[in-house]
Image (cartoon, rainbow, N blue to C red; front, side):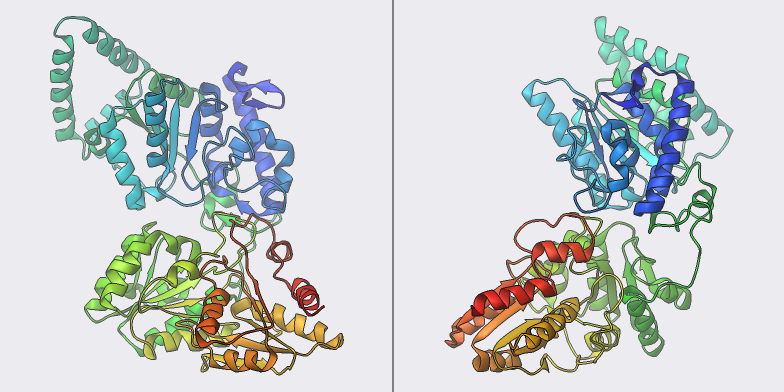
Length: 613
């Protein structure tokens, strides 16, 4: 049952629902300002979520979110309001829909543009199995920049399946209505008398001889007349009953239209206009700052300051310097310009940066075309989103050995966003791509050097993978010129790693030294292709090896190196591979997750002692 403070939403009046919306917004602001998370999109979706819960029963009906970052009000209405302060924390609520949390969460969501496809699959399963429930896909206008959304819309519209697609338009006008007649028709679409007449007319025509054919003929005439006046009938051409646009903050109107859409036995698209950050003025005025936030003071709002120096910022600054030297260098992003540190580049070279929207596959294919014709493109992308472009990596880039550089941001553990965003898979799929080179810096200086090297010292596809957040000051030496190197001498045990695991390994080596165990630390800079000669020399001396990585174990560097040792006939007394494991990694802080996975300094120390004992 969908309820608010013990009262069933279906029994609440419009005025009571408005009060509930105000209370939900107040709790949202209070919660997210403490836990961090997605704020603006959730504030904008409150009335829409309440209206959905008034009309449907999501213990039975299926609500499929797209991305899922606007699901906080849904969680609050489905028995989780008193746990919102645990959101994004270890063992707490996820910031995305999770069926393990509640039966009302229909499907895991964390990446964009798949909701219509998933919802159509559910609708077809319902039909085939003879069951009775409603299916709703909630997709934002941003997700419509991804091609998968149109694949789903094309199939859903022609399927004839009963389902509702809600387009939550909070930033981009999908269909610009121009002229007085167009505005009049749009308004007429939403009038109760028009909707009632349309429903009764269709039902009447179905019950009389020849009525279906007559209805189809008049519908065809109406569609063509409307198409000559309105600038687009895109969704109707796909096969949807299009309704909208409607004010997404008008609860009575939303409720009425959802009830009407539910009476139709066909695909319906309800176009809803909402305001991102609704109800909190700072978020309304600066929605880009309040999309995803860290904890902040809601009274003061987010204090705008100089961008924090982190790996993303260093990447962007270095790329801008290189671009100033070489006019062939250009940048590509998939709706993540700020997140990948490219704002400065965009200001300096506005004609050399391309934001393609949430379309990673298109971005990689476009980079391939650029490279083929003589440009030097770099695609700045989160590790977890690069997964979406694997075919283009293989078919469009690697097959022709094209020189495309990939700035793989958020590689490794990212923390609170959880399973859908942990960057633990990129090394596994990149290792299967022929001609691929993968470099892994451990500090800012190495990132800058490796990015330059990626452009000028290598051919074919090159990925520079770096973590989220700031560098660890424990290791600031620039060793990027070497494929691998010994950064600490030892005699009893070899500890190897790369990237932001190096500080953890060095901490462990210090503690083990205090306990009388001498460890040699080998840092690997080039992960693919792996030719770690210094690492081989080290293990031939110690005969004991531990490789520590925050990636999934299959196709990890440690496993690849173990095969290499076997090929060379080198036998070890002890071989230990510490990775993120073989499962998806849940949400929590990075330090907590490292501890749970057994890849922090404490775990390294304990494992070395256990092995030697």
